[in-house]
Length: 277
Image (cartoon, rainbow, N blue to C red; front, side, top):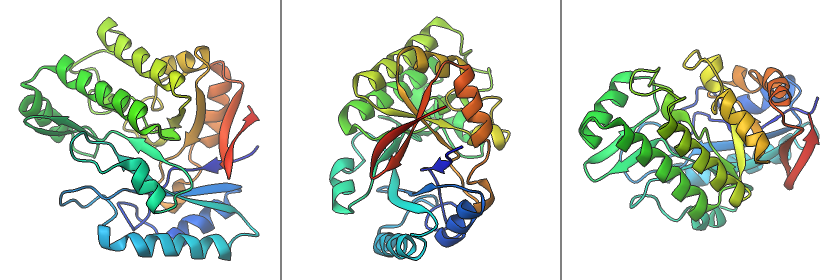
């Protein structure tokens, strides 16, 4: 089986291992392709993103590792860009400036006139407070803003990979909404249709499942089936923050994709290519 992972985090952002430790683990676990994707800098103080003053070091280190391990694994350089309306820099412009091999774009912070709703992280309290403080407790308004921002990102940025597009469910746990509600399904299907229209590659992210933060992948099984029906391209990412996580649930997810109707999966080797499942 061809194994790869283009979504990874190291000590340059919120990961726990160095870039080189991630590479060594990827080689040991039989990956043929591996991508570095530090969280992009964001225009406010934070402890999760690549710091502006570290960008050159990050890029130089990825170049060094590409050369050092070129006979063992193909390595690529990227960033996972946070798309935040009115705050994000031009993502395409940044990617070109840094000569990145591909682009991952994701929504972790949802914009509202009252502030930013952080849908990620380990604290459910932050999620709950954001719904109340940013959207006056209106869950449909909050979730609608998340998917609206995601759709805007896909259309405006046209990233290679759309990251964990239904991660807004992670801290919900059926408390504020159910994923089978019509209004919610409509938002998801609009997002899937937008990916189809823009020929995006949808990431099937295994992290929530192996970390025990979700009982399914990001996106969940019903949406994986919808992606197959709509012929949206998919790739598998572990979103690893530790060296030991570089291939977590890759094989299981591949089998699941096949069961859900997907016939191929996409990987990057200078250009995007597909391989049968």
